[in-house]
Every structure is written in C-alpha cells, then in structure tokens.
Image (cartoon, rainbow, N blue to C red; front, side, top):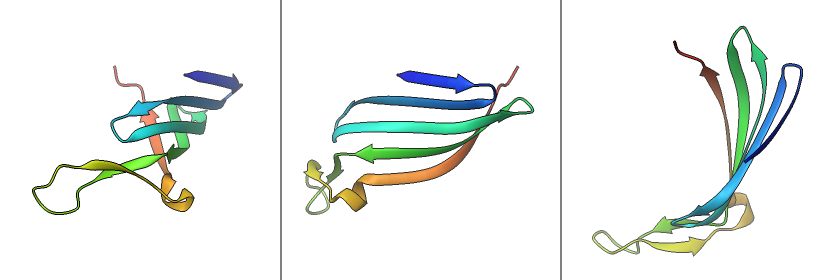
Length: 79
C-alpha cells in the first residue's frame, strides 16, 4: 500500500492477488469534519464464475471495460 496527502486531500493505492487474479484499488478523497469522503476505483484482471449451478467456479479473464469498478464511500473514525 502507498499513500500521499497534501492538507486534507488524501490518496491511497494498494494491489495484490485475489483468488480470481490480480487487482489494484485506489481511493481518492477529502478529510472533512472527521470523515474521509472518497471515490474509489478497482481494476481486476479476472472474475470467478461457474458454467452451471453446482459446478466449481473458475477464474476467467475480463474485457477491460468489465475489469473496472467505481463507487464512493465515507469513512468515519468511531470511538
């Protein structure tokens, strides 16, 4: 994992291997009023899927546009 910040602007990136293949995640956000408001992006090389119900799942490579996921999250420190 690697991260940088400048004032209240924060960016974090991590990568690794999952059961389905390689992946990276990036969070970019702002620290406001004790909350970290972020947008995140995941790039995943493959996904697990079965050919039929009851069959074992296997990793299959994804097209680039299926490899990307994005959303937003808020993180708040709980005491």
